[in-house]
Image (cartoon, rainbow, N blue to C red; front, side, top):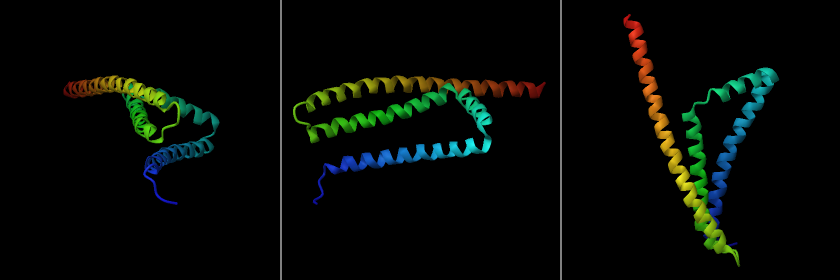
Length: 139
């Protein structure tokens, strides 16, 4: 079997998918261990508290990561589809991928702007809290 360059994107994609699946599996295993240690009610209580304590900035950061991964996948699709050329309709797939790439790009830009604003708000809130604490100490 001779090496072909067409295998490179498949290998890279497989490595990336394996990395993210490993991270997800690791988190799932930790959750199962915690569930068995804490019991059903305590686990649910802590899980609910964890979901409620997520800040909007953390949520935006997670969404940004997901959008970047999606953008990368669309880019790889745009590059690989003409190489593979599924006979008869590969150009329709290419048009869909390019349109999705553009739409996702605008979504990524918008979410990045929201994240930057939320980050600035967090910094202002921290400085206000520090100012308040300094005033309380001086009294």
